[in-house]
Length: 464
Image (cartoon, rainbow, N blue to C red; front, side, top):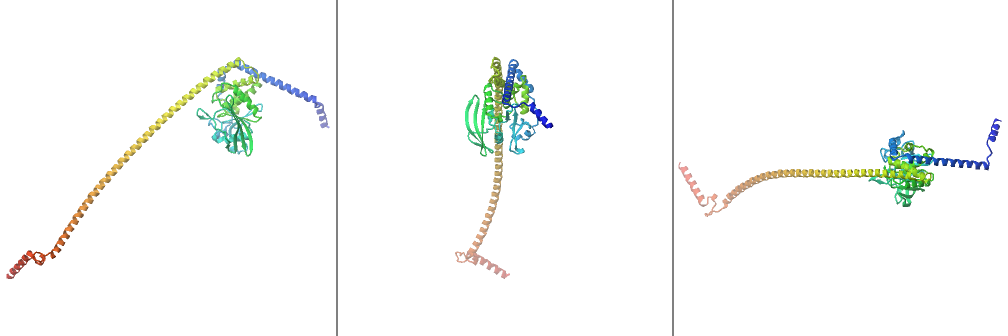
């Protein structure tokens, strides 16, 4: 019974749903939306006028310096652990909003990329320029998150330093499981921007990606003209098809966060006309540690926000904005010139050091040559000494050999003499004298005399 009463009450309290009621609700929603839109538009106007009237370039840069060291209290343990996949050793991404690579083991799901989710549900992925070992991870992220737009805000090489590994080529290239090929390419679709259509394929599944390369934005500084940047920003919002927009520079924190900041700040200002830009900076850094790196990037962000409101016809481009642009351009030129001079000084210093190193190398080479020459001279002296020793030894051996030979020859000569004597003696036995008998046979004069002597001695002995 109670249930029936409750139902009857509900029926009585709820008016019947009719065509007239539906139309009335729709009109209310439209009116509410219109009122809200008007309010948001008015907020944009109020904020812009306040900035143009009161803000000075020096004041804006001072505000940045006061908040430059702000760091959110977040953990970066995973990013620190996976240091080999980070382009820079001192730049990490927070664990709480890092992009986790899908269809990967937890030990292999890391990429230096952060989710930057906006209040209006638009999503950006801020990431570093790929290094050689993470190109396949980069394309895996783009493919699995179904990202249809990539915004590149750096050059591959700046000031002779690599800022981003080239992650696609004119020909079809394979990166891990992914084949990437260029479908359409324009040299320059508008000032400072190149546009390329890419096809990413894995296991027969194809995915189209629109690649926008803003190539005239150097590290730590900012472009002079905000118009190309706002045109790029508007274009990628239309092309993204409600999918995450991948944005990268080199580290993925300076230029990247400035670009994303255009969307975040524009939305926050529409809700709150008294918004301080330092709040935008802090919110950006909670999503991407180190977001916005320099004073010029901070000023450029403000200039881009006002240019965005001008393009939306919220405000008109008046003399105050022209004045701000001029001052910004003057400061940017001066800072750019100072940076270029500093870079030139560093290059000169580097070249000087290289020359000094070359001189040192030459000196070392000369020293090595001298050492080799000394070694060669010592070797020659040693060889000469050894040669002299050998010569002396040979001389001694030669003298000894000569002595031995002399002795042998003398001995030989003696032997020959003795032998000859014996032979002569033997020969004399048969040698006939003029008397026809041998000397030893008593023949000849000597033999006769000897016989006579012997006879005389015999007679003498007999007489005795």
